[in-house]
Structures are given as C-alpha cells and as structure tokens.
Amino acid sequence: MNKLVQDELVQLSVSQSEDTLEVLDIQLSDYFDNLLYLSNYIQFNEPIKAILNRNIERSEKGLTTRESNALDDIEISRNLEGLTNLLVPSYLAIVLDHGYTYTNYPNLKRGDMSWQELYADIIDSSNYGIHWIGVHPNYIEAEKEQFPYLISIAGVVKLTEKHKALQMISIHEEKIRSLLNDRAFDAQQEIMLVDANGKVLSHNKQELIEQDFPYYETMQQAGGYHVVQAHQKDYLMVSHPFAYGDWSLVSLVPQKTAVGNIQKVMGNTLFILLFFFLLFLILLVLLVSLLTKPLKSLNKVIKQVKLGNLNVRSGVKGRGDIEQLGHSLDTMMDTIEQMIEQIKAVEKSKRKAELEMLQAQINPHFLFNTLNSLRLNISMNGDQASSKVIQSLTLLLRMTFNRKNELVPLKMEIEVIRHYLRLMNFKSNSSIELAEDLEPSTLDFEVPCFFLQPLIENSILHGFDEKSGTITITSKMEGDGVRISVADNGKGLTPDQLQQLQAELQLTDSFEAENRNQSSFTGIGIGNVYQRMHLIYGYKFQMNIENLSSGGTQITFYIPGNQEG
Image (cartoon, rainbow, N blue to C red):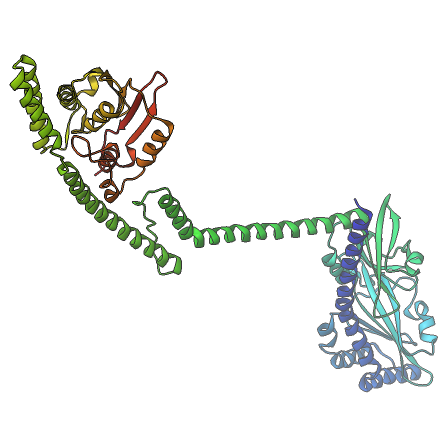
C-alpha cells in the first residue's frame, strides 16, 4: 500500500478513536457529576451534621446504645431519601472517628482493616475536597459475585474542631465497563479508564481491571497517538484526559485492523457512491432516451425521405414541441404525396397530348412522292413487284392512320419495318436488306408503334453511300425488359456527328423538339424518338448510339417491362 495512503488511513483511525473517547468523556462525566453532587450535598447539609454531632456527644458521655444509633440511621436516611437512588444509584457510607458507621446498604464487610485504618491519610488530611480513590473490590457481600468491582470517591466532613466524618461514595464498575464496550467499534479494540498512577480503573476486558497499564509512560509523551507493541501486533494508542481525578481514557486498537476497518468503510462508501452513480446514470440515459425518442423517429423519417421513400410517416403524437414538429412533418408529407399524385396525373395527360401531337406531325410529302413513283412505274411497267409495293403501302397507311393502340407487339412493329423497307427500296431504287436476329420470347413484348421507323429511315438516308447494304435488328430479353439494337453496315458517323447526336438526345423539351429534323417519314427524328420513349418509360428507358468497329452505326434501346404512368 502506498505509504501516503496508509498514513492517511491511520490518521482517519486515530480521529475515529479520539471521537469515541470524547463521547465517553461526556457520558462518564454524567456519572461522576452525580457522585460529586451527592458528596457536596452531605458536606454542606446541616441537619446531617447535627445528627452526627449528637452521636459523638452521646459516645463521649457513654450514652450510646444500639437503639440510639438506629434512630440516627433513620434520620440520616430520611434526609437522603431518594437522592442516592435518583442520582446513579450509588452507595454511601459515613464513618465517625469513634466507630459509628452509616450506610445505605446492608451486609458491609471491610475485612481485617477498619475504615479509619484504611483511609487514615484521608481523614488526617487538612484537605476537605474530594479524594479520587478509584477501583477496588466490592465491599458489599451480597453483590460481590455479580459486581466484583466498585469505583469510589471519598471526602472529609468537618463536624467540630476535634471531630471529622469520612464519607465514601461508590458506583458499580460494571456500569463504566458497559459504556466502554458499547463504544468499541471493533472486537479487538481495548478501551480503558486509567488513573494518575497508571492503574486500570475500568476496562472493556474485565480481567485487566486493577492491572498496571504497561504503556502509561509512553502515553505521557507528547504526540496525538503512539504505536505500541502488544501481543506481537502493532497497536494504535490514543489517550484523552478525563474531566476528573487526573484520570485518562485510553484506546488501543490493532493498526492493521484499524486501517482495514477504515478501508472497509471507504470501500463500502465508494461502492454505495458508485451504485447510486450508476443508478443515476441509468435513469439519466432512460430519461434522455425517452426525451429523444421522438427526435430519433423524426430522424429515421427524414433519412427515408432523403432516400426517396415518401410513404413513411413518423407517427409521433403528443403536445410537446418535438411531437408537434413530427405531426407537421407527417401533414407536410401527406400534402407532398397528394401534390405528386396530382403532378403525375397532369404529366400523364400532358404526355398523352404531346404523343398525340407528335404522332399527328405527319409530312405528306413521302406519301405523295411514293404514290407518284408508283403511278409512273405502273404506267411504264405493269409487273408483279408493283403489286407487292402497293400491298406494303396499303398496310403502312393503315398502321399510320389507325393508332388507337399506343403499344403493339414487337413482331407487328417488325412487320411494319419490312413493308416500310420494301417501299423505301422501291422509292429509291435501292437494294437494302433487312436482317433479323430476334429472340422468340421478345416477339410478344409490347413496344410503341413506329418507334423503329425513324431509325431505319435515318440509316437509309444517311448511312449508305451506295444504294445497297444491310440493316440488322436484334432483340433479347434482359431482366423484365427487352434490349433492341438497330445496326447498319454503312459509313457510320464522324466523331463530331456522333457527339452532336448524343448531345441532342439530352434535349427532351417538347418545344425544342419542334425545331428538329422534319424530313423523315413521320416527321419525327431520332431526338423525337428518344423524347417519345422517355415520356413513356421515364428514366428507366435507355438509348445509346455508337459506331461499330466493323463499320456502320448501331443504336441500342433498353425498354423496361413496367412503364411509368
């Protein structure tokens, strides 16, 4: 153990012993105050002195009888009636020099020596004050076994110039010992009352009474406490001067025990403090958790809203500020959700109107030119090929003017492209071929009608320098959607053209779309195709344009399975 800590613990133990002795001083002083009061009462009680003087006169005249002494006993007892029992109780003896003795108890036994012989020095003394006799064996025969020791004080009462009376007042030592035992805070602690000669007057261990205190000389040395060796142990000795008789109260406690007791008390105190601290901490955490629970709920809601989940609500209820904030947030989210639904409805109507507007932008020049070419060809060559061209034109016109359904199966859209390519070859006197690589599972997948036609037209008009080539259409399922590619083996796009076209795809504003190329069959360019698909499928739709390493251009679509709106 750290020496500084040990010294501090020793000081605490010494302070504890000093406090114990101070309390004992107060309690024992009450007992001896009573004895002094009784002694002073007899010293200055004139009726008692008169009785004693009368007894002396009878003795000098030879008139003393047993009856006269008995009457004196009765008169003295009447004067002291209730006083002795009230104050302690205590035991009183008054002895005259000619042998008369008054006691308030029976069965007096002094042994071989008389009172006068035993206390001759007190009787002969000119000091009429109190003499502190201390502890001695009990002279009351009936109580000697139960109370082996008495503590007494004595005094001389002056009756005449020639005669004195000795008064002896005693109490049971056991009463003092009981107080010492009550104040011992450890079974190994010794507490005692020691007189001015180092004799033990009372001790919490009865066998040490009337023994000489072996450390009396050490006790007289200066210092608040002393460490002494006893029973092969170090003892802390603390003394305290008693209020009467130059006596002292002494405490002896094993140093190890004293320090251990203090450590135990400090440990228990620390444990209690720690327990209440943890209890307070737990209550604080619970209180803070209770107070911040609405805030945590709001924080979770805000995070969900940040991730795009507008259906989440806090559900916080109450009258506090945070609860009111949560209620306001829920109300605001309800309003936002309603507004979004309204905006979706408006956008859907707007999209439908724009699609109808885009689909209505048909430039009749192609129709007229084709019909004119067909008329000239029929007039010059009436062959079977013209019949097929007319058939393709009829089908294409039917699809163009009959657009009740916005979506058609992919196989129908491919059929339209076949007829459209036949018409374009006829019109331009070209021999462009159509190659198909279609997964069967994609043929019934619904796609917007005429969405491939502008791409085929773009390849025919801008992709081939010669009037021959191949356009390849591929399709395959990908997830719940379909990926469709339109590629040609033409000359491809220059880097500037490719960059410009990719930038154009970012323009989805319907008013900007009106300024785009109007020269296609339907009047809808590649940009308009992207805008149309984006309006139908939203941000899930993907479109990419690239040059092939083998030559030519490829346009790839990803059409999701679940369209928006």
